[in-house]
Every structure is written in structure tokens, then in C-alpha cells.
Image: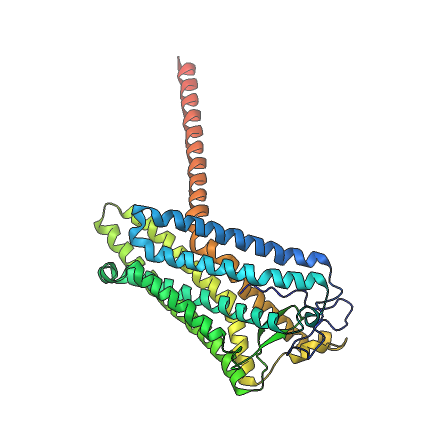
Length: 372
């Protein structure tokens, strides 16, 4: 889910854009905003592409090593997550940026509405797929830690591939429902991106939007519950090994890395996705929409309606940010940055110890000379 809406309003207080069905508003691509504002989403897109590409490279290298045979299911999940995030960014972010930079109405760029439908479809697919893959990874780690014997005998890479393929196919089929008439993808304020029509008055539209939010929240709950169960098992096993095993230091280091990673996963997923999913459910059940965002007057700019529109944009941006943070939290933070930090800390500590030893030797020699 990489579409990154631009500019929250016209600095001159005029109409900033449109939200609603195709043809129901001006759909202006936020006239009056400076080109500097594009630098931020462009930087974020490049950062996400680089991070996911590095994650896929590290996964492919680790997957081929003999030492990683027991972790191949987990590596497959990480690689699939990185690939999904990468494809999502490549499909949606360039559209948002190009429409905004062209300074043209979306209807002028997409008179048929097919691009809007494709964009909304991509946002739905690459929004739900990472959430479901994250849940699959959480379940996989829980089984590996809490039921290692069952995991070793039943959890084969073939099973992991089947689960991942099932996730992709199920989400693709779900995202095609609006194209089949069950729901709708509509232009969103400020007219530079498309997503699920939350304000759709039809029952099928409300049902589709609430199902998307419900599935997203369900995956978050599964991920958090499984990660908490894994953390509890790691902490318990770490205490046991500290008393009976001579390799407790190494186990403690691995357990601490895993604990930090799992905590990071929960914090990132919850912070990035909860605002958007909860807002969508709130809008569906209260039968409200953001149609008012398309016609701000100077007085309305300071009203609560404007704040609601900006909050929705912020929620979408946070969800998009998750794709950028995923590779760093799941893999790169643990495999590269943490190791580099430990190496640097070890080098600094070693240099400090050597320097202290040299000073101690010099001081001892001076004392001996003075005594002689």
C-alpha cells in the first residue's frame, strides 16, 4: 500500500481537490503546492525500494546456505513480504507522483476511470497481503518456539509456499470484488489517489470497506497474540538455559535479538495500521464519508471537518510507511545494523581496553624508574 497522497490543502485557502466517485469533483492534483513537497514521498519511495531489495538479496543468500535449512520457512515469508512491498511501491507510488507533478485533474489523466480502479485494486492488494504475511510469520515463529518437535516434522517449505500462494490468491480475489460490482474504488481527496469508497451508500460498498478493515484488524490481533506467546516462551526458555546450559550467553544474545525484533514488529504494525483501519470502521458504522473534503471554504479550513480530512490522510500515510519500515524491522535491523553496531561497540571497547593497558604499563614503568 504505497500510494502517498500529496499536499493536504491549498495554501491560498481555495478548493484543494476532490474526493468521491469519478466525475463528482474537480479532482485537481493540488494546485498551488510547491514541487518541494514531492521530495518527501519520493525519498520515502526510494528508501523503501532500496530496503526491500537489500532484504531480498540477504534472504536469497541465507536461503542457499546449509545452516539455514531450519529457517527456510521463515526466510520464505520474509522474502515474500519484501517482494510484495517492493511490487506495491513500484505500481502505485509513481502514479501518485506523476499525477501530482503533471498538475492536472485526475479525470483529465484517467477519463475512463480504469487507472483509478487499478490504483484502488493495488492499494487493497498490497495493503492486506503484507498484513496477512506478517500474521503467517508470527504463527510460524510461535510454532517453531513453542512446538519445536511438531514444527520440525510438519512445517516444510512446501507448506509455507502453499500458504503464501493461498494468501496472494485470496487477497487478489477479494480486491477484485469492486471491479465485479461489490464495492467501489473511488478518487480520494486531494485528488491524487484512489482507494475503497468508504462513503458508498450501497450495502455492498459498506460491507466491502468494513470487511477490509475487519480483516486488517484481525491480522493485527493474530500477529500481536502470536508474538506475545513467542516472547513469553523465549523468556521462559532463556531463564531455564541460564541455569542448566553452558551456552547460556549465546542463547541469551539470540533470544534478546528475537525479543527486540518481535517488539519492533508489533509496535510498527500497530502504529502504522491501527489509525486507518479503526477510522474506516468508524466511518462505516457511523455512515459518514469524506465528501465534504472536496469543497473547503475559508471558514471550513479551521473547522473540525478539515482536521478529520487531514487525519484520514495521515492515517493512509502511516499505512504506506509500513512498507518502508518492514524490511528494516524484519531483517535488515537484525542482520546488518545490529551486527555493525555490535562490531563497532566491540572495536571501541577493545581500543579503550588497549589504551588503558598501555597507560597502565607506562605508569608502572615510571613508578619503577622513580623508585630506582
